Image (cartoon, rainbow, N blue to C red; front, top):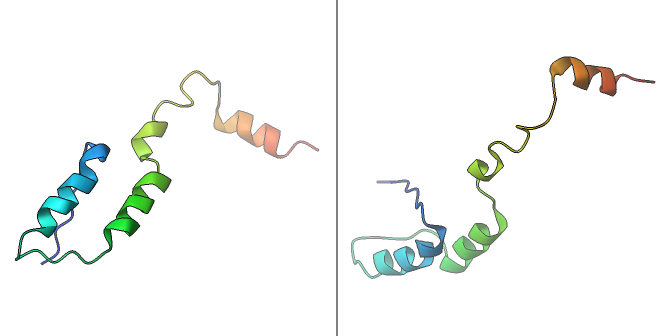
Length: 69
């Protein structure tokens, strides 16, 4: 059975993986080093929420800028 988890506290991921790896009935399919590399490289989507909130961007403005010659 495959279960997907979303660990909210990114700093606890390694500790969590180390803990569940001690359980005999859990089989981890990836290397912890690979997980650590992925965690450090990937940003979370939520970090980008609101990044354009103070910008005056509309479809019309984008089209005007894209097709100016």
